[in-house]
Length: 390
Length: 107
Image: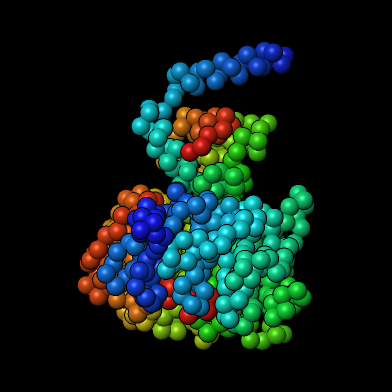
């Protein structure tokens, strides 16, 4: 009797849990609510929000990687917070505040190491994915003002290797953390002015850093231990005055399709097409505004693009075979991110100032669902766990 | 040339002038603060403590010339990612934003 009463009085322990019954995680994901420090756990089969997890700190510019179990998400906050979220129990499993100002991170191929890119103090810190205990601290290059260079474009490649760029000093570093206590680091200077973000090609071979300070990108062949970064698409602005950029483009979440990389130009309302075989320009596509994200549907048939302020209420769809813009859609105000379901039949689009996520059918290009969210920014599905450089 | 008391008085007068005469309307103020949090915040941090761009907190701006800061807002900083906002923000609004930033705000 006493036990029954107690059971009635106690709140159900798993009230916030996503899974009362056993379930898989292949159709789960997270939507970052940037202003409230929370994430929404969503599922893409019924297209619903399942739970909200709060207390993740400052999530402006937050990004997420997934453990290979597809159950745990690692959320990188702006305030240096690294939070491990259990998607099935809809709770914070671990959380550390590991720096003062951070920009994102990556996870090793074996799922064992989580690396974080820090602005302040500048460098990369690496954590045991199971416990979030720090296993390595790799400070960046010191600057004249006593600070250290800001780390951007941190990507996982193969094995326990990571690569990143230093914004202030124009460097690319690549590191092997097979033995985290003794990281083996290759440092490359003078790769170009102000690298701002980077991507790794789907095969894990090439690290491509975008440059803000000049027209071009730096490419490093990670399969060739003697290789140095080389410049590609040099002078793509053709000497024209660049337009002002009201939001920095992103390269992570590569858009490789049909042997081409689709890359945002800086200060131009264009996507640049880079041939993956020759590393030469293969054309360009005029678009609605300054591109921020160019993301390929997983099959490479389409590339979806969103734009910087003030033209950020639209997304455009590019048909890859014809290289034509085939649709301009208006999901809502201030579109920040797009994420495809694992096989690409849906794309989820966040509209920050409309406080919603709009789900499109990528064949009909029509909206099929809306999910309310508080100032949504990044959307991240568990299929990222299986992809290099995500 | 003004002595320091005179300069302070002039500054107070300017401040009063800003607050009483050329304040943006309330609705526009809310819009500017939203912009500050979310658009400026994409580089300077949503809490304005800095990111790819420098901190905009009062301690970081202390001692910096208001007119110079307003000019940066309006015209940007060539060679850096700071773009010119003068296409959509007036000089009055830039001055108001700088004043609010120096006072310290939680947008």
